[in-house]
Image 1 (cartoon, rainbow, N blue to C red):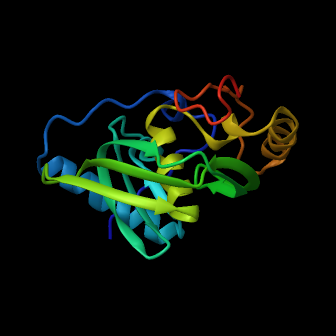
Image 2 (cartoon, one colour; image 1 turned 180 degrees about the vertical axis):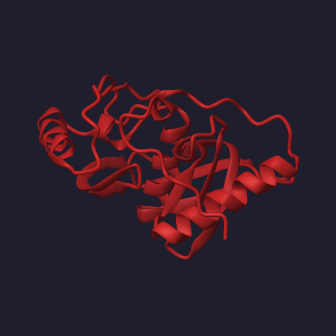
Image 3 (cartoon, rainbow, N blue to C red; image 1 turned 135 degrees about the vertical axis):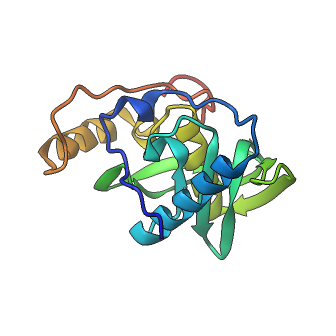
Length: 182
């Protein structure tokens, strides 16, 4: 097993947009394996490369009976339905809050061999695909919370044993859920 340490909230790599993968090589295969092993070890539904300190557009997922990885992913909402539900993040341990996401999405990209992949997801899988793609854009689920919920989340984070006291950054996602600034 190649379990790697997960970068925590406050690490600048989590706020830096990842670059597209151009080489589908042995290093990419190793990254996907490291992502998978770390995600499974931590019991996560997904894990993005920036969470391991790697600024490439790659993530793994394992939820709602679906498992795999996507390289250079994009997603599209299949309709105008939304879901509100509890969301957490391995980079923000112990913090679980209601977050609004699209209910049904389709994500596409490539696998580690450069072959096209498309996955359609609803509910938890849709949430996971959106959450992990956000990581690749330097966006955290905290950025999607209402101002009141975000304030409560930041208080909880500042009190967490793992938090190092850095100044948090809040970004606006390029994939707006609310039709404008969040």
